[in-house]
Amino acid sequence: MRFESVDGFQENIRRLADIFPSCVKEQKDNDGKTIRKVDINTLQLLLGINQKESETCEFSWVGKREAVKEVYKPIRKTLRPVVQDSVEWDSTGNLYIEGDNLDVLKLLQESYLDSVKVIYIDPPYNTGNDFIYADDFRIRAREYVNAGGASQDDKNRMYQNLDYSGRYHSDWCSMIYARLLAARNLLCDDGVIFISIDDNEQANLKKICDEVFGERNFVNCFIWNCSTAGGIRPKFASKTHEYILCYAKNKTCLDMFFAPLSGEAIKMYREKDERGLYRDKDFVFKNKSTNANQKYEIICPDGERVRPKDGYIYRFVRERFEQAKEEGLVTFKRTKTGPLVDQNGDQAHWNIYIKKYLGDAMGAPSTLIPKEAVSIYNAGTQCVQELFDGKRVFENVKPVNVIQYFINMAAKDGDIVMDFFSGSATTAHAVMQTEADKNIDLHYILVQIPQECDKKSEAYKAGYKTICEIGKERIRRAAEKIKRENGCENRDFGFRVLRLDESNMEDVYYMPEEYTQEMLYGLETNIKPDRTDLDLLFACLTEWGLLLSKPYSSEKIGGYTVHYYDGKELAACFNENISEAVIRKIAGQHPRRAVFCDASFSDSAAKINMSELFRTISPETQIKVI
Image 1 (spheres, rainbow, N blue to C red):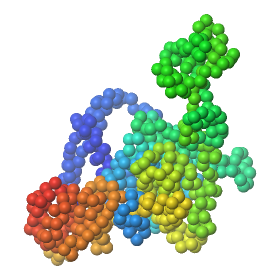
Image 2 (tube, rainbow, N blue to C red; image 1 turned 90 degrees about the horizontal axis):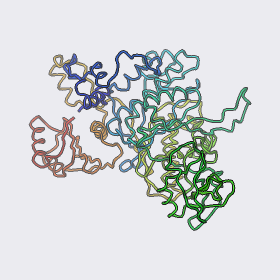
Image 3 (cartoon, helix red, strand yellow; image 1 turned 180 degrees about the vertical axis):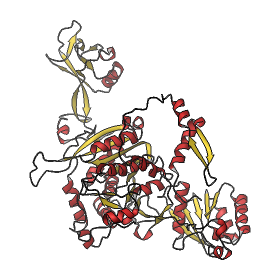
Image 4 (cartoon, rainbow, N blue to C red; image 1 turned 135 degrees about the vertical axis):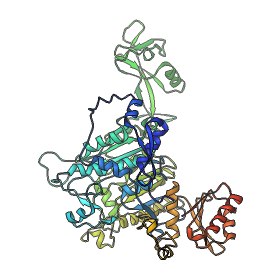
């Protein structure tokens, strides 16, 4: 097995070779491994690119090239289950992952490729007072320590990016660019990403997103009224808003967005019939179009024939108008000043309207989010404080209904929502509340680096050593509150905790010719001694590209532990010297995949015998030995 993330560069070249095989050449590297390289000149020729046209409009910064390299470079890391921190471990469809989000995104590339419907992230705003990731491509580990005393483990992979730093914007751009490149692959074709930001990096983020997702896939920039601007009066203007940028993976696949109508909009629905509240919407409106399909003649109730004046058109073509008329949606009203003329070109005596019903009070979202639809920062912080018995364990928390607003726009029953800057886990709270409100099933994936809490903070004094501890506890408490208030005990309120760590496999420090017989006796297993069966199982899941949130179970067969994942999708046994009877039993269950480890077999003959048994009993099973 590979036991490292995908080599992103080689994967991109493989995809390119499917389209343009003549521009991809194979060659051996220094280790004799076959790699593919792209002939850029041939590719440009096939794409019709004039190689002399070298000047283009592009957005660049110091460190951009290194950021791209880091995204596609494979890593030898794994995700280890943390059962004791999880809730409903065996059955939940939700994930909470602790670790550097770039590494985690790399490990999820195969399991969640094209699988996530909505990504919401609230990254560091780079205000000069917050913290961003100290990525390896930015500065060497020794330099982290010299610069600020930060250790090299994941708990302190953050540093304060002071606004007088020479690379103030460049470091932030590299950090977010790398993560967006990796995250884009996880979105399904009709998936969307929402990114909260303020003025410090909004302009740069827009350019980066235009590059990563494509300008054509820009959906909108939403404005959130986040504050009442209380406190000391600023010199120039009170800042009361932030932005949420929205991009699609492929906008042509994106469904129409809906959001709750504002209170002012709802007041416009003053008429009522047997179908409910409605308002009359102008059927004739100003437009300089000369399209004859929207300037046809209509017969009014008294027989008068009308058409739009110059500079006006109808909202529908004739076929759609006749359909609306049959459905009882057309209203004729007498007037002396309407936008219609009669057959003689004189002012008509009628105007035409289309009934628009209030229905579920949903409509096209406004880029300026209505104040009554979502709360401000104070409400988010207050929500967490109430959950934690009055303790202020987290500051500047996004309100739950802000994230719900965007989840409701894009997510449908069964979709996955992801947040890889999880913070206090507001997104998990929002997903659970949305499920209860709309009676649908959603799943979430949260990723958060285990950044240590300040020892002077209220969170630390309350016993929470890292942000992850706060996030997990918030999910537990929010779940109980939602169950209590909504009476929905049967929903999935659990979450499976996974923690990023180094590979399960022992490192190799010697060339093959350097090993002695004595050394080989000490290497009877290539698995690190502190690793469990579940560690090995979940490494296999990422290796095979399986979702990490499917049901798990285990049973004892002949004294050996057999693990089952997602029913018959995978069976695994990592015990030493497994008996033939147990192997026959596993094969007889016809799993799609079966996994063992080297120590499961006393010698090569036993391993060959296992393969023969599966070939006879369950030839369709894929087998791996680690």
